[in-house]
Image (cartoon, rainbow, N blue to C red; front, side):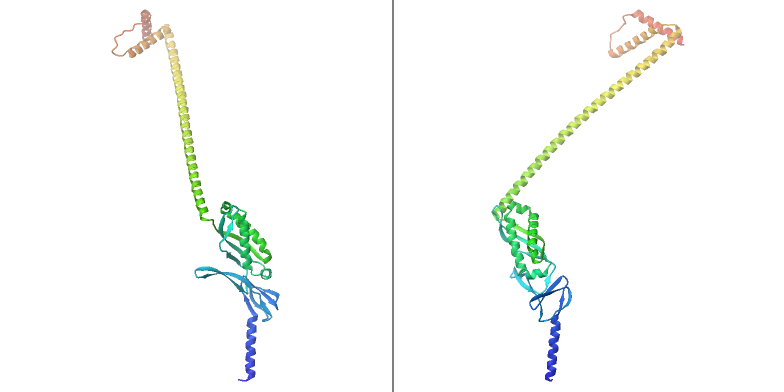
Length: 329
């Protein structure tokens, strides 16, 4: 093989290598910042892109990764040519913070952020993940330092919102959008935990006693109201019963009176035809009814004999009754 052939093959391999180095494939949701001779040139979008090898070079971005090492999670920083535009989550290790009431508490947090401007993320800050981590830690200390321990335990949403607002504003110049911040664990000291547990047990006992007392009070009220309603209903029933009984008696008496009036009218009509005195007849009937009532009240074994005071009047009345009966035949 001649020297010319070898040189041609060498140039061919170099040309192929240059072409391969000049073709850059960018994945979806990623981008690449290209520098030409050390100066920003352009930003590559997703798809196939052509650059000039040696002259054009991608600007690498520092990135944070968690790796398992000897059973522990270790943070490693690496350089990447491609900038990931998707939402990323960083899990920061626990750190001790001091609350407003001087309680040292261990807190760890999650931050969800997204690079929206890769140029700012590369040129406005050195080591973006480390800057975000340090900023989150200092902001967390400041926010927790303004609150007491009880507020920290009961106001997580408020703390998360405040952290997100502060971090989003601070990282805006780095081309980063902070979507949300989540506090994972808030671990006060052991003695504080024991005191809080005792307080919670006492509070639960107190609430249980209050609920039990309120239940007994409500039951007594309901029982009294039920008894009162029953007495009212009974009294109302008795009243209505007496009213109905009185109305019945009045109607019965009225019916009897009307029947007697009708009987007297008919007797008077019948007696008037015989020219006899109807008064004597009615008196005789009343005498007889009264004697029958007296005999019933005295009983069958009574030996008492009742005689009317005006026996002669009674006899004449009986005679008048006989005449009336004879005339009716």
